[in-house]
Image 1: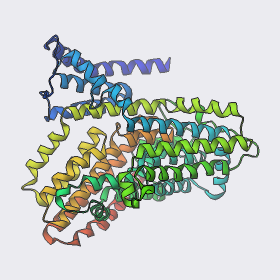
Image 2: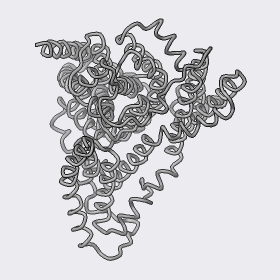
Image 3: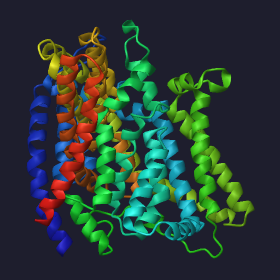
Image 4: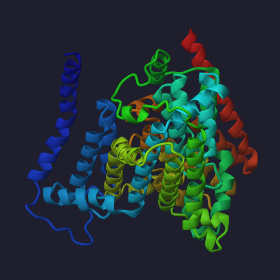
Length: 554
């Protein structure tokens, strides 16, 4: 009775939120033509206007209010399709399913997207295999001998997240799979684990010289600038305030032992034995660890090490490293999705030989773990596909052109404050679209055109763009990294989003102050004195955490 009453209270709220959306949709449909075939030059009326950001904003607001992400994403997609079609129901329906820019069916046939889905499925199978074989439980026993506290468990998770810097999605799934049994044993909430994973995924990749992100940034710098894109990326690392502040905040939260916002409740409940606090437990079957006699730690360590090494080799292979390309160029040209599939499939085959030949489990049990792994990853895969669809709708409506116009019109008279402005715009765009790569691809050329002759301001502003993109991606419930962090931690997705948001916004506020300082010093001094903004910002972050702890005690 209690659950039914709770659900019935939510229904009027949901109806109240969705009603305006459907009223608008009906009005648009009634006013549309019976049949409309757009020509090759068709441009929707909402193109490159503020309405181009309506689909993701609708989806995010609904997700945060209703705590339910599937319907929120679908409504956002439907709004985007209707805006693109000008209210024509037939065109909207076809756009939603078959648009080349990101229709639902087309997303599933995209090789990169399909590769990510296959990687997630294989990794889900590996996690179930490690639990079923007892190797995860054995690793947990071993870890307890070397990790003696909740602080130690969290710091070990941070360290592993830092070490796996090649790709954010790979980071999320691998760190979660390995560290989840350890954090569970020390009663760290799943929401806190998801935050640690997310905070050491994109923030690490954006300051790691050898990563898929470094390659993406290198290519975003226009060739007309005659600037080495990789050298520019290296120069931005000391100024990437959000990434550095997030890592400082993560370590500070752990050592100072302070939590705030919804995370405080999750951590309090975890200390009492409830790791989830609220929401469903979609991974219960896969979280069950078998206590297998004589199970060995090596049965977990060997597959994990093989996964890391083989995925890196797979990425280098797709980038042409074994055909004569340099290491840097190989990472720059790498097809991450293809490399991850190659590496994960090799690891699955190695695990098969290790477990079957070693008598760890029977052939029937091994095969039975694969569909179980697929079932465990259904929820994140659905969210991923819908998020890609939503991103495609935003692209169809010209959100990139809209932001480009806003930035160009405001840049001329605000050069000193441009790093701050770029950071804020980048955060908003990445939060709305759920893509950090798309964000800095849009904004970096604009920044380059403004500061072509001022090297230090160019570096600071590109850093602000990258930092804002990572911040928005970190906050957004429709971001690939956020979704995969939830999946890696086996945490309810909206629990992860709502508990992480206050932390990410705190780091964003401190970073914004840092970019104000860096912009003023860099514009007026015109040299590397602006780098003093980095230690000032890091010190400010620690001071904020100490104030929060004191206020909570008060």
